[in-house]
Amino acid sequence: MTKLIKQWHIAIETSYPEEYDYDIEIFVLKLIFPHEYNTGNARAHCFDKEGTDAECPHTGHRALTEKLHQNCTNVLLECSLGSRAFNCCHYFRPILTPYGYCFLLNSMQNNHPDSQYWFPNVVEDNHVTMRLLTEVAVEVFVINKEDIPYANLAGITTKVATPGKHTDFQLSLQEMVNDMDVREVSPEHRGCRFPEEVIPHSSFRFYSFSTCIVDCIGALQMKYCNCTMFNLMPTARKDRPDCDYNGFLCLEKETKVAPDIKMLLPWPENNETCDCLPSCTEHDLRTVSEYSPRNRKGDKRRSVAISLVDRPTERYRRQALRTRLDVVVTIGGILGLFLGASILSLIEFIYYFTIRFYNNTRMAKNSNSVQRAVKAQGDGNKIQAKTAIQVILMLLSRS
Image (cartoon, rainbow, N blue to C red; front, side, top):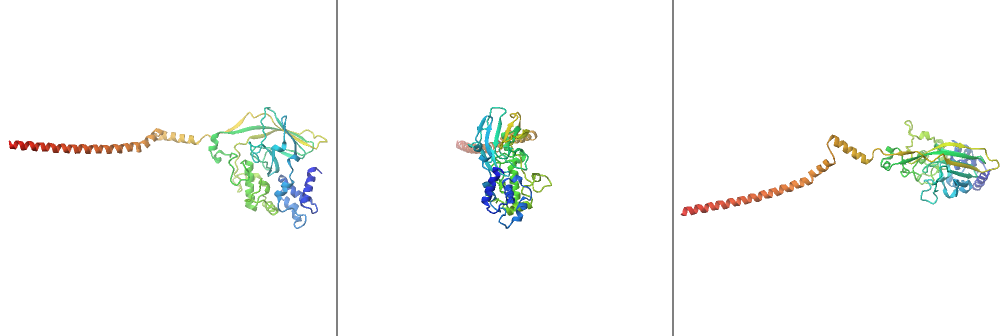
């Protein structure tokens, strides 16, 4: 019996001092390691014990998992990148995931680049290897920094379970870069989301395809059973209560404990779809080789070595073919081609109905004033001339 199993026995016996029942242990094991769950586990191991002293725990599943999960110091013994060793538990940060409690390195979901816990992974050598030495059986995931481990999503993973086993794991990486104009395009048109574009009511700090699927499954569980499995949320939420034992049975009845991802994809015949887009920043990770030599006899420790075949020499680039400025230019070109319109004609149009209209009105007023003045002066000259003629006629008549 391993040290880990002994610790579980002691913890369970302390929490449930009644006669020890291995069915309870299996049920608790499924809570701690949800990826080991099979449909009907809760009913199979707990149904015949209802009302007895050895019944399965009905509530407090999150607290029970936090109590029983392993500490980092009991999992990771030594860590190194190249020839440089580092403190495993300082940089591998714990978080509750759909896979159970995991220790993530440089994850945006429980860390950030400016934190003291963000591992500086800048290296100069082209063939640097990260080595992990562990005392217990582990499963190692290699994921993007915005992702989380999830059993039903295909990913790069390797299991190191047998004592004395060593695994060499080689990967290839192709980066993804985005132009600044891509952010101006809506997620529906660009076909992806940036990590900062978190969907409403998400349980995670940043967006990724895996977190979107997990949030979608949680919403479906709420729809059918008014609760959500606690392992789908890193922290407890009031608007999505954790499922108790009865909620667990409800989810089993509706087959929503761990639904098949293929049934959630947006196919036309599927009524329960998850409209999840890929992340705009996720890199393309692929397994090149995985090799495990013979187990080392007498050594109970396990180890795994992860390395890149070579530094990335290619990268994908996402760019926007049409930005807002391009749309304005295109509309202007169409108007200029078919209507003879241009920016100058638009300015002229505005000028004609504003400045020119004002000047024409002002000039018309000035012209009317001048005409009235000239007319008045002309009438005065006529009166003076008429008076002069009358005076001359009077003088002539007197003479």
